[in-house]
Image (tube, rainbow, N blue to C red; front, side, top):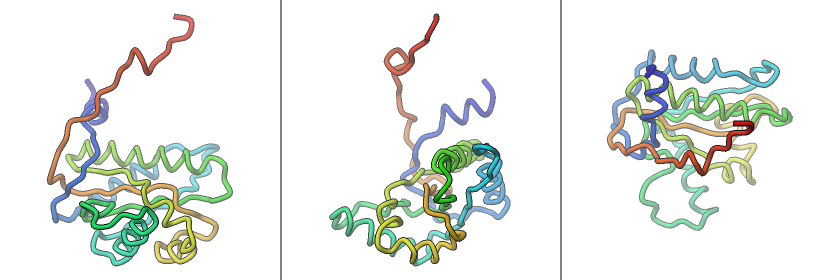
Length: 178
C-alpha cells in the first residue's frame, strides 16, 4: 500500500497534543499541502492564517463558542491544546469556497499524518466566527477583505491516539451498472 493510502487509513482526530511546537519546516510543508489542493476553476481563493496555540484570540473564541452553545466547564478547549491552529478563510462570494477549503484541510490532515503529526479538523467555532463578532474576528485573524471563515485545523505532536473510525462499505457505497 502506498504511503499516502497508509496515511489516509491511519489518520484519526487527535484530541490531545504535547507542548512541542512544530518546526518551521513542518509548518511550511503543511501549508504547502493545503495550498496545493485543487480549487474550482483553479481560483485558488483560500487563505491560511497561522495561529500559535497560546494566542489570546483562541481563548476569546473558546469563551464565545461556549457562551453560544451554553457550555460551562468544558473538558477541553476546541483545539485541545494544540501548539498550532490554521484557520482557512475564503472568498465569501465564491460558490465553491466551502468545498475548496474542505479539500485543502483534508490535504493538510493527511500530510500531518504522513509526517507523524496529529490533527483535528475544526468546525465548532463557525457560529462564533459568523455571528455578531464576525468583523472583529476577521480582522483579528487577518482574513483578506471579502473573505470569511470556512474551517480550521489544529496541528501538533500527538499526546493521545485513537483508532481510525470503522465504516460499512456495503451500506455506504452503491455501484451503478455493476
